[in-house]
Image (cartoon, rainbow, N blue to C red):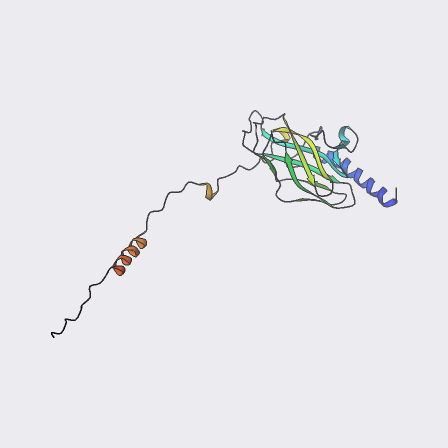
Length: 222
């Protein structure tokens, strides 16, 4: 191992070690979590140890944290609704990468909305606010899980199972998924009544197209 790769490995290990305490920190916002962080499972590769140092991933992309925000405690998200997806990603390579799309299992959701490709710079942590699981096929109460396939530009596809957690305790301050509103094109509209202008134009047309009487000169007597 060269000195530069050794330094990168040390830096990545430090970032990964720092990720869990940061995610476990109390308080509001994306960093709020518990001392037993909600990690994904069944990913392509278990890239880093066990317990608090556990991270899943593939080809240098590590995923130490992933969860889907469910409803308030005791409530449920209805089928057809949406849920926010929170991920923490770590690029342990020396080359930039991108999370381009996320595909859910067909039985659980219709799609996952990613506002734009998420850049993963070398040796840095990236978080993914604004990602939404849409078109839920069954109600969610918390405690379920949904299989997702994360598609990276360089690292390829990473399949993992992500837990659904209730929006309570330290997660209560996280915003729920936005509620879709009907667009103008989907709103019912009536047929517009003819306007006065159209009526007057029709009348004018009738008058101008009618045959006008013509005068003919009388024939001269022969």
